[in-house]
Image (cartoon, rainbow, N blue to C red; front, side):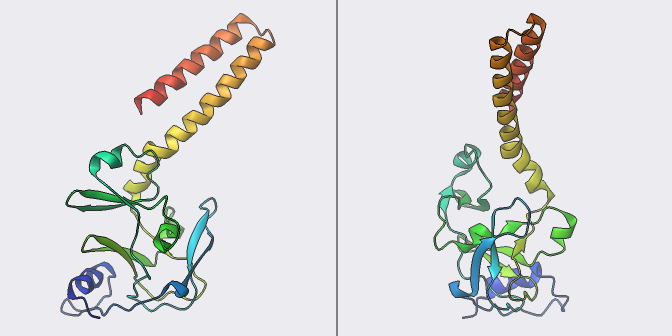
Length: 208
């Protein structure tokens, strides 16, 4: 079934290199055409892979699903790694973290490095309150689907999630060091230094 609005978005997003008057016919796929397994990106966890060859301009089998968040709810969400910005009406983002079954787009990883960006093969397209991923080029069987969220995404994610996680880990380590220093009757100077470092970490975490 042809969707002129969706096709116009993909025609622009895919950078097909055709004349401005051309249009792209969206192809469909099914759940059997994709599979979830360990990502080829180190540290990324699971990823979504093509179980058969995909032609360019093929829509992945289901939209990005999850809890719909207002801007206020989004800002209060501690782990935003599974949030896709929709920005339509009262819905700012869709949080797919909790919904794992029947939600394949949840497993599409974002390209972070220059090498990964060269492998990007899908683009996010908004349609009628939903987000779909559509291939921007041919994808061979067994290839991992990757999307580019832009450099600003990783900077924001680091500030919102990764940096607080690092500080919390440092905080736990410093607490253990302080307890060990007190139990081992370390010098008062060392205990005082650890206490000051602990307070500095708490202050840094509080301002994030």
